[in-house]
Length: 156
Image 1 (cartoon, helix red, strand yellow):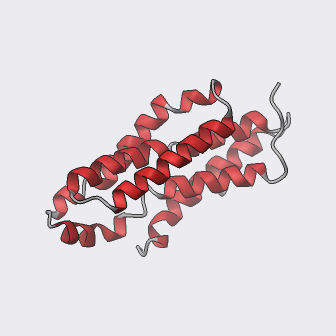
Image 2 (cartoon, one colour; image 1 turned 60 degrees about the vertical axis):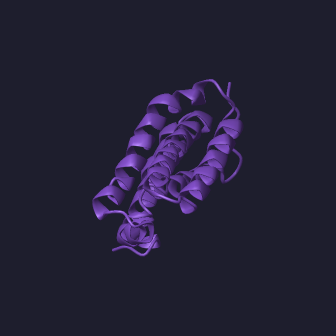
């Protein structure tokens, strides 16, 4: 039997999901500036969002199943640490290759958003599991991160 989430736990997981997934979209308004700073064509830097989403899908396939085998606090903590490290690598990237590699890692670590949804559902009280999943996945979590990632970075 799983322990129920502490008070506010579902909203914390929703915040984690939103913050993590927003990293896949936040760079999009700055792609022209990044291309100019690195001195590479925009067509190369245009691959950064693709790298992030490819990494995210890989994370969904390889990391999401870990929620069934590892303690949620350790799994989420490890992925958020990896996300922070990948973001630091991306910020310090000296060239396009390192930037693309970092965004693959950012995307993979951002898959913690889907794990947060699964954790919320698993630890919700019986009869409230759908609400927990929906709050993280559709409500204030994943959708908010996707919708607000670009505008928060200065995009449209």
